[in-house]
Length: 362
Ligand code: FES
Ligand SMILES: [Fe+2]
Image (cartoon, rainbow, N blue to C red; front, side):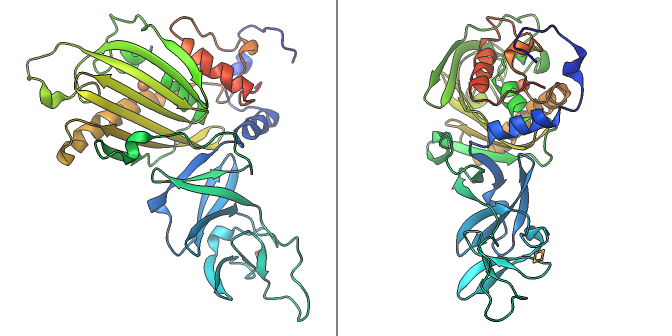
């Protein structure tokens, strides 16, 4: 299709994007770090399978270090994640369950039980291995050797003046990672989807956004008044009868393209919502959430914060899952109709996605 602007069409609402669109999206996303699993969910002595950008990945801790390989044996393509960790000549290896080929920490085959005596293991007997990092309680993988950006910062995670609770959603969300970030960056939906919690419908006017790029972050800032509750203020400091709204200063940092950190500041302190998304597929996303606060630090209070966060996420889920196309189209397609100035943050995010070649024509 040419880059001439096309009008709204039913094409946008087809449920399945073309294979070309899906592989274009995966190619665009390969160059970033993605969280794939909570560190605590990886067994110490067994491999585990995860899915990233439509690719099966096996994670295994070999000699104390987490390794990530393509979850496909080089021999007859059985899943290595069904295998086991074994010791070969003093080093731990991942052994395929089918015929026992074993792979060392760099993905090279180190043992073929059927190899005739005197024959060398073929150099091509190896599986692709990927870079791995452990950070913020998560295992991160990059499918490309040279990630474009570092893992985005979450300074409150290690800050002892904050209390942090983290939640891993049990069920993946049926949407793209990009739509999850957009749904978290979007504030004009607050009065509609989160009525009574983050806004009210009789006050739909969007706040005045400032948006800019800072290194690998898209930063957005605005001031907003919101109803008082656990997600907007320190309720422990308020009297029960005080229903006056709270002024919050939001600074949202999108760690391009798949992580977002919402920092809410008010007179009581700072409340941070952090979301790291794993694009399992173009329409399946695993969300890792964490929440940090530097007030009302009593651990007994955690549940109240978790409950309201769970409610807000449950309100968003059906809306975000309903959006089509799953893969974000480029602006020139005219499929979406963002409206300035309220949608400026989303427009700026999408512009950057286009530059990063993540948005593709569906
Ligand atoms: S398929 Fe893995 S060893 Fe044969
Ligand atoms: Fe929302």
